[in-house]
Amino acid sequence: MSRSSSFNRRAFLGSAAALGAAGLALPALGQQLDPAMVQPAAAPVNSGPQHNISSFRMQDWRPHFQNLTNGAILCDLTSRAVHYWSEDQNTYRVYPSSIPVSEDLIRTGRTEIIKKVEGPSWAPTPEMKKRNPEWPDFVPPGPDNPLGTHALWLSWQYYRIHGTHDTRKIGRKSSNGCIGLYNEHIAELFGLAKVGTQVLVM
Image 1: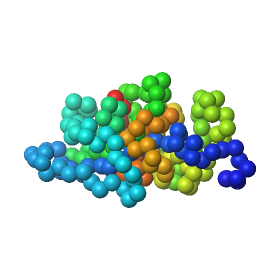
Image 2: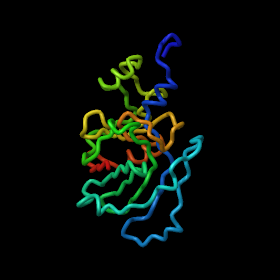
Image 3: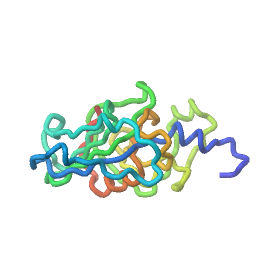
Image 4: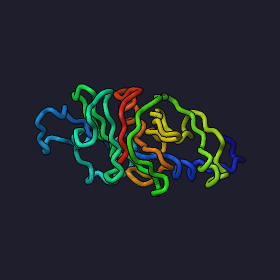
């Protein structure tokens, strides 16, 4: 974007991007796990300070889903973590995440992944544009894009689980409704999840 543009990249990314932090890679849920052996995966390089790590905990899928058909993703807004279970129960991941910046932007309930996009473009919703008329109407893929490198479209209009190029607000309330992860983590989740994967936001 040109220097003459009124669009402030730093301010925009700071408020529009959804952010995440480090993840955990764990054995299958069917195995007995020794909590002392569960170690956080390395945070992405240059990720800065990690927030909210102490609130992360392993979860079982059974209280949240009837089955694991197509795999399942739980977005826990309280602990700011995204959990993933594979259909065969051999893969379990938990990634710290960002959550919406205010209560009025939060949507909870059951949905599913309807589309996967590598190198997503972005356009503000009508409500975002009302609140921030200086924002651009369209941002192509690249370092200015608030969706990062990968995005998982949910069945709810405008809602995504996506990456971010801006990691300054890791684990905080910082998105306009979406759930955000580090680019490294959304790339992994992108490879694990599929169209039809169940999603619960709670």
